[in-house]
Structures are given as C-alpha cells and as structure tokens.
Image (cartoon, rainbow, N blue to C red; front, side, top):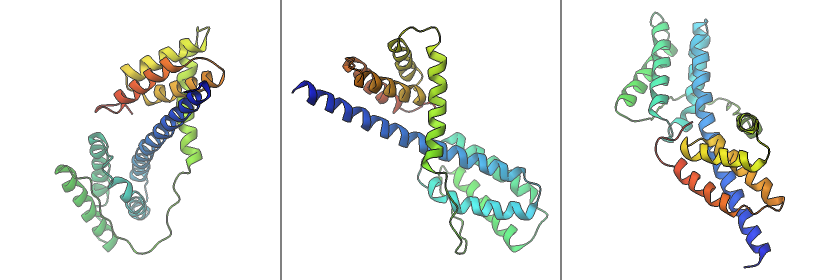
Length: 216
C-alpha cells in the first residue's frame, strides 16, 4: 500500500468516526431539548395553553421517545414533569384535559414497567419544525471548542492538547473529548504529521465510549 493509499484510508476512517460521533450527539441533544421544552411548558401559567402545548409535545416527540434511546434518568424526569402538569390540571374537566390526564397516566404506567412507549393520538395538524442540523452542530462545536480552550492553556504544542483529549475520552467517556481528538488528528494529518498511533488510540476511546455508562 502506497503512502497516498494509507492517507486516503486514514481520511476515510476519520470521516466515518466524525459522522458517527455527530449523529450520536445530535440524538442525545434532541432528547435533552425535548425534556427542557416539556419543563418550560410545565412552568406556563395559562392552563389552556399548557394543554395544547403538551399535546403538541407528545405529537412532536412521540417517534423520538419510541426509539428506546431514553435513559432511566430521562424517563424519571419526564414522569416528574408530567405529574406536575397533571396536578395543575386536576380541577379542569374539559374533554382535552381529561384526555391529557389519561395519557399522562399511561406514560407513568409504561415507565414503571420499563417501557418507553407513549401514544397520543391527535387530528391532522401541521408538523412542528425540528431544530435544524446547523443549530445542533453549532451546540456540539461550542462545547468541543470550550474543552479545547480549557485544555490548551499552558500547552506549547497541539499534540499535548491531543494527548489530554484522548486521555479524557478514554477515562471519562467524554463525547466532546472524542470529537476534539478526531478534529485535532485530522488537522495534524493534513498538515503532514504522522498520526497513526493517535488514530489507534481514537478507535480505542470510541470503543470504550460505546460501553454502558458513557457520559452525556
């Protein structure tokens, strides 16, 4: 295999890693955003608007929540918020409110049994606009950039930052550190540095990251 072939193979490996890492991070951000949105709805004062907003929330996030990607902490937090909303609406007896309370009860029963399925049927309506990929990627880049700025203080060479980033990716299973490592490796690679040893560590960190108990 020629040197050019080796570089092309390395480039494909790094590109594949970055694509997988970004897709995984986007999925997690979507879940966290959906929980934050539900929390905002629960804080609203207008009961009618709350009923409509929760209905929209179920309709918008039902497919996401049915994919089995929720952590137990996510399930617990959603259950707490929904119970709070149900308590606020106990004195209301409109058909919409009664239906919403029924769906909240169904969620709590499913959560207690370890199932993540939520079913909320509504009539035809205009689909809500999801956060675009640019917004999600910007959030990922902001966190990754913050990690770089933190770890680059006092360092005289980029490789020192890379070694720290790989250490964090392995020891703390940090997605931001994993992404930062991939970015730096690719940057060094196109600058002519020999990065094969770092690519091996990156692959090892990615395997560790996929093990149960990885950080958000």
